[in-house]
Image 1 (cartoon, rainbow, N blue to C red):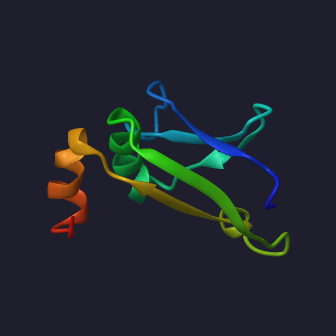
Image 2: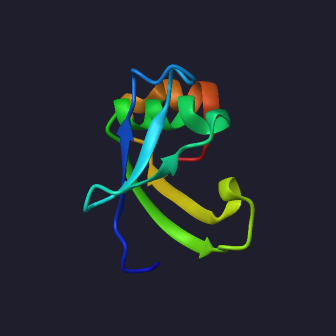
Length: 94
């Protein structure tokens, strides 16, 4: 899992989630989608070109399909991302 590079790709034509975001490997394989609960936030992070690092934390083939791959997202908000900080993150220290 550590060597697999991952990326986000917005999916604006998704009929189930207006903010749908695909999770793909750098080779283009689709792993799945950001859960709808988080998709609007991730879309905003992408819209504001915030630096992100997406990685696989755990793979459990015996889990329910939606729980088989656990990912972590780390990143840095930038000066353009005030809306994210205000509406999604709350007050942060600078």
